[in-house]
Amino acid sequence: MDIQIGCKKTARRAYGIDEIALVPGNRTLDPSLADTKWRIGNIEREIPIIASAMDSVVDVRMAVQLSQLGALGVLNLEGIQTRYAEPAPILERIAAVGKEEFVPLMQELYAEPIKPDLIAQRIQEIKQLGGIAAVSATPAASSKYGSVVAKAGADLFFVQATVVSTAYLSPESITPLDLAQFCRDMPIPVVLGNCVTYEVALNLMKAGAAAILVGIGPGAACTSRGVLGVGVPQATAVADCAAARDDYHQETGNYVPVIADGGLITGGDICKCIACGADGVMIGSPFARAAEAPGRGYHWGMATPSPVLPRGTRIRVATTGTLEQILKGPAQLDDGTHNLLGALKTSMGTLGAKNIKEMQQVEIVIAPSLLTEGKVYQKAQQLGMGK
Image (tube, rainbow, N blue to C red):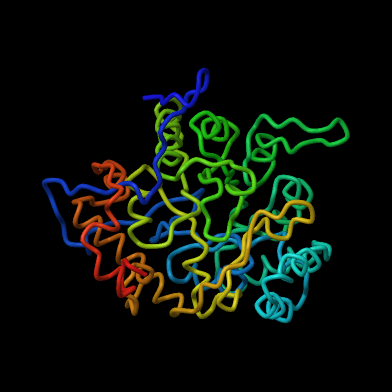
């Protein structure tokens, strides 16, 4: 139902992940029976979790380890890894700088040109170590470096921007990336994003996307919603885009996975996104807390280094455990940020969902008090859900 904002302006109510809860049905099952496998392109993974293409989250080593653990990591082709042959000293500078000097330093460091030979080298390093080489670039960089990526033997290409659409207007002097043509020309699956509406999601699927990314501005280090005022809360955005996926599948027989991207911190967040219709999720800050993460206990947004309008910041996430503990356990924290796979399997068992498709069908209720009800002691003592 639309809500009237003013005389001639109405709005639809949208919901965030924190405002909903999942309802158990008539059946439960042992968590060991929950099948979390999913496919993206021609790649099957045990864990429907992707590490974001952010410099604080994924480098060659993280991409390989995530692959070995059954998940997936995406390397940012416009970041530190492809601008500097030796990224370690640069990452140390980012971790050491003060708050006031952070943005100017980022603008300076990211002004270093991207080197095509480093793009090829990083992809080959991941492949040589047995990892899945998934990489990401903005539309402009995708057009420029797509052939380099294909020649280097990457497995997946993510075309990502704050908002991506098939109807892009540009100055006459600039030729925009034709997403449909790019998907046809690339010899590997292409994932397109980000979007938050039924119509755009449907158009990206028609353009040939192997999967779509859903989410504008919910990320822990992203400030786009504050800077631009743009975004749709994730529960509604995912549900709308999942509806487009289902309609497209019914019409064409082609199933295009929906990936919820951003704003997910705990296992419960991941469970609720899948219940809203997502096939998988992309997360950043939870993996930035891994001992192996390149961010050294810090996490920053992809648009932070913008020379004209930064839309990200650096947050301290600290180091809380190994990548394996965060992804598969055993959990050493009580706040839902460790053993994300275990949380998903246990939730599926509690809800009686044998696989991801059944998890997408569970009942959802609006529950703004879900995270606070009865938690007065945890809040007062800053424990568990009160942190």
